[in-house]
Image (cartoon, rainbow, N blue to C red; front, side, top):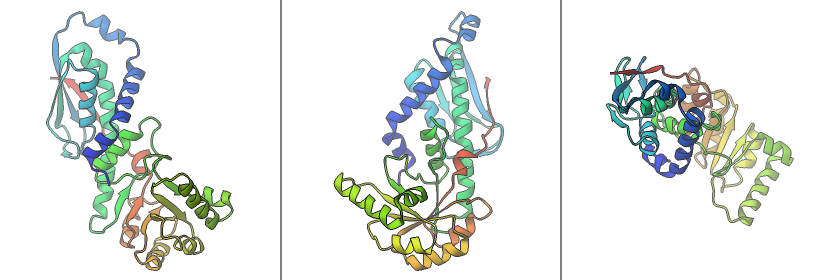
Length: 289
């Protein structure tokens, strides 16, 4: 599983393009307001503060933004990604020309508010099950264009990343099974595809009932079995049947109210779409020092 630093290294190109596209979207050809108001290049200092307690996230991404696109600015950080920050604390300070600061102010806020919300929710859920072996996973239910920062934020909050997209793992879901005609046909077709293309990527398969579970466990080359929308009692029975032969993930309608039951059933992972698609932002402000 990737660490926080490994994520930046592995996806440096994607992070760069995310920042470039986000900056182009906001800045465009020119910040006409700032250009009309500031005739000189007087340096200023602004600080970013949080308005509630949180697990801070997005500091390193903000640093990259300034390093790559606003090198005339200086950034001082007072916390690191993953630190617990209290309401009102100064997280970072940006110094340099007013015009340059205002050209990235909103993007930095958007990044850090969104990422910190995800990291905080992920951390809270992870703490609920910290006494078990189970880990919290994200999903592909991310904001279009914002996937890499959102999945980075999950890692920062103590969770783990599922596949990044459709390209880095095979996940045989209900639609694949139903469209193939049966779970057996979907599995055999997948194995043939992997062999023909000499592909070595993880293969996960969702099962909805005991019949599908029985079929999936006949194929020991599968990397993970996902128990899809099973109740906690069904999950516990399935874990007992599998007896450690496969990694097991629970998926579907898992939240802070029932996550403990699933984690204590013996599964290795719980995947929760809400940690990215429904996390509330952490309110923050950038104000003049």
